[in-house]
Image (cartoon, rainbow, N blue to C red; front, top):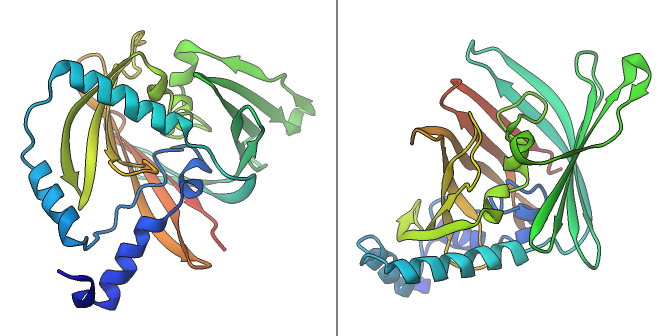
Length: 285
């Protein structure tokens, strides 16, 4: 299909390729989970041929798989937002009993010359204390802190630094764990490229991240489908437990055009073990 043969709808889909990393890094699921384009795209013929070849790739040499994985992870960790941003949204949690509850959340991104931070804050409600999670993305590592404002008791807990098993705990009782919101798996030592293939009409690098210190009930490894072109974004991810079972699945779900730019409108994480689901809906107005 040539450029002249594409319909207006095709052109609109192709323009999704211009989504900037700020849409993704703004809220760190996901930083890299979020900038991904999931809608079907009609690509120019050279890319179509490359994608068709990638559907039946040759096995990767182990040394090559590790080298390309390191290069990919390094490029992803180097991505950062261009400016500070603040937005609000809803965290919708559906439990195993199919009951759904909503929590208003504020999302902020702060940048400095040496690092940048994602800040997730639940807004006050009668049934939920204000919880603030801060993830500082520094060179080579993340720093996590959690603070709870117990308004009803007129007390505010001191910020608590989180490490290790504490990262495998829910944020605001949702299916989004602390580690999810910081993309902690990118900092695990065991990284290798499994294959290259097309998923949802996007040429993807399939990255396997091995947790060097898995905890009971936490992730032992994560397999993620990452767009091959920069800025890299996550099309889909599966999280496994120590028994090799998939316990979580993540997908960006909806996009909306705002002031000429496509931005992520919602993202979903499903907990297969608990039969629950959580969705973050961003306010893009």
